[in-house]
Image 1 (cartoon, helix red, strand yellow):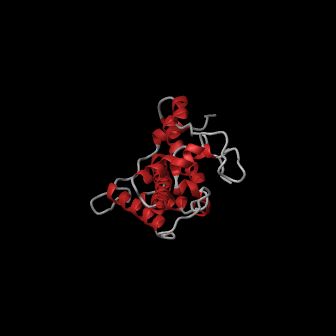
Image 2 (cartoon, one colour):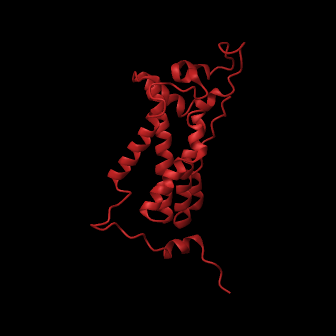
Length: 206
């Protein structure tokens, strides 16, 4: 009795998706992908335009340099009656430096915040789109629809304005899986797993 085909065997026999012809638009062309990014960025900027949202750490929005400096100390005398900054390290990368660079560029805090949200949305969208393309699932239209559905899930839409740092591992999840998919098709699976190893998750903010 023959054994079921392995992942590599299925990948070899999988038929490639039909290419876009002259009369058939490609929904994953570079121009259309730029349009998707513009839509996601606009979606971030139309939320409470001109206003800052607390997003768990309001001092990170207003003075990111000072916030990051406090995170390097074991004792923070500026909050409550003094406390151990147990969660500040979770913002050391990438959210803290992103806000610091925006502050250095003299951008308004609310603009920096919306750009950060747009980055998270675009990472989640294009990561899912790339993963679906690599797996050969669906068509161009259904892949784009699935990527938008992933971005608009309640988990992302309800957290991005409250504790956006927790969206970072969700947005990176498809990018982590991509090397593993490649490793099952060719090359070293161990090397692919090492490339896909995620960084430590940021600490949950109070």
